[in-house]
Image (cartoon, rainbow, N blue to C red; front, side, top):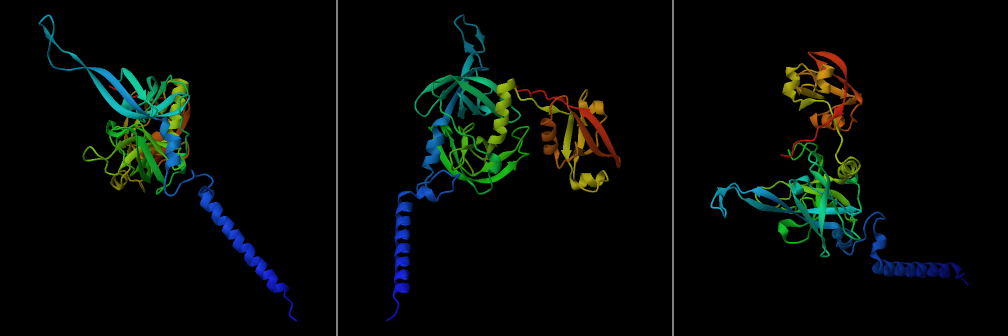
Length: 364
């Protein structure tokens, strides 16, 4: 008689596997979120509702008003004529981040004499300006409101092209709107939108009124402040730009501590090296920047920098382009001494310059 033990063992294993698969199916069917990555917000099907529910209450409408001179002639009670005032109002968006503080764009509140924020739950509050930074087109407001919402801050340096992002704001004043897209690029610059540019580009629809609103990831975390669009009309063409939250976080901290953003200033007007310029100046490649101008009474002037000098290194760090040079100098604390290496008339040079504080740009 044959031994039935192996057959019984095999049958037992098959039953165990079948029961295990059945249990796993039930668990996954009831709790699909268990299959999600530990760092990601659980999704229901292809929905991002949990991310939106987590972040949308912190996005507000920003209404501003300022008095402007009409420029025309208006009748007065004494039958004399003169300029008359009118109220100009604008609409944008903002993001509650913590303790009643709101991040938005500088251009949204520039020149405003009164600012009001409207929450998605119907509450309305007056807001005051804590500080602005035109160089990055950011501003920090504060609203005195009980139990203010707050949006968790993400990490914009962890974004990659192709990541899903959502834009939340108040386009055209129709009410809070959510649009979906992907990260099209990071580190966009030389757009002429602000002095220090390091934009996230996205095809999530960003329209007039979205400025100052939130760009979030699928976990419902803030990764950018929607700032501008490229358009040939009034609508979105799928090219929108947002200030990365890592930059906004640093600006916010300085505005809270100092009421302004403190940046270093050297006093040169740098220009990117093109192959033609490199050849004209006898340089082996296009690494570095050409000094297009030296400002009078500046650290650069005191250090002996001249027009036509090529700066290749700042404190030993190679400089690739004008934006990088400005960023390195801006991040240097006033009073610090920097070593500048470069080439002048075909010969290498090294000078030292003491950085001073950059004056805030005129806001008109």
